Image 1: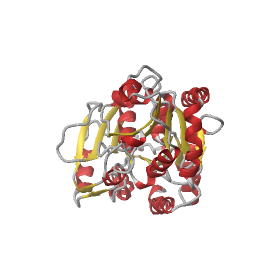
Image 2 (image 1 turned 180 degrees about the horizontal axis):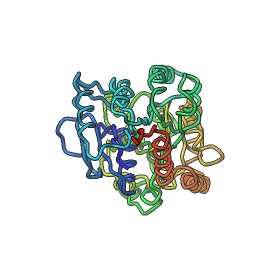
Image 3 (image 1 turned 135 degrees about the vertical axis):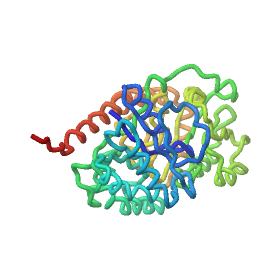
Image 4 (image 1 turned 135 degrees about the horizontal axis):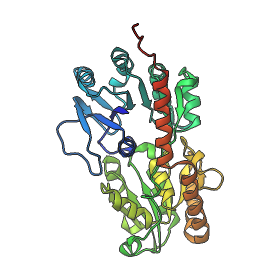
Length: 384
């Protein structure tokens, strides 16, 4: 099968990881992938497979949103027409750009089935400004998504939301994010020795308002966790991080590591930690959470998006998105002091990932979806 994949390679975010992991796995299973993405001429990031690559022109590319040039659609159309062999379908891991809304028309003209993965985070209860803004994103996209052959989301909550907004139920498929449980697994790490700590907590992700990292930092500072317990922050140091670091530094047991590009190094960091915390106001299905669970960490996350669903039934600790600092101020000392409890939570977390969220199962479901779509395509009339 030949898949024309439209996605992202940079800047780093969950969509980038999703595209790399899924396309690599598809190639490993013998499929052909042509990768379309918004980029200038630039060296490929680490750990990307070697496949046919088509660059689309853009005016502005941010962490989440991209503004294409006026000719990007034409570049896409011409490249799709020239691909040999012709793609069986297009899979758009939606980049949140105006081009997303043109894809159904492009694919109809080229007689190509169109699949989308819809990533935007959400909070099922619209409890804050961030969740309300994300809900508007779902409202904006729903009429266009209704024209796609299939829309992949990560949870049944997302599926129900899109159906309520008018996307036909038969076109919305739930295929959760998956993680490679062989690569992400418990193992040896020197991190505690390097940081001179007995207990390590970690946040890994973007340092952005919707991730609510400051709520965690406030709780940590107020809890006075002691000199032998430290909090590791792994993520891009943008403007928000620069405003936080002066107030939450080494004197409070907080270690800012910045963005770690090397995947094996990130795995070693996770293996060296005891507890993973994700205080987000909105989420989809966090790959960082699944990676931490696969490495056997005790995991704490808010019930934003599908993360609460992932941790339910004792696979982790679920927080409300309101009052995160207050909840963590009570919880952090308990997680520090009760090592047998956190060890059990870590075992439950890894078991949950192995049962529901493996990359291997994810790719099998995706292959089945592709096959189902292709079988439903009208066949050309034969001439007698």
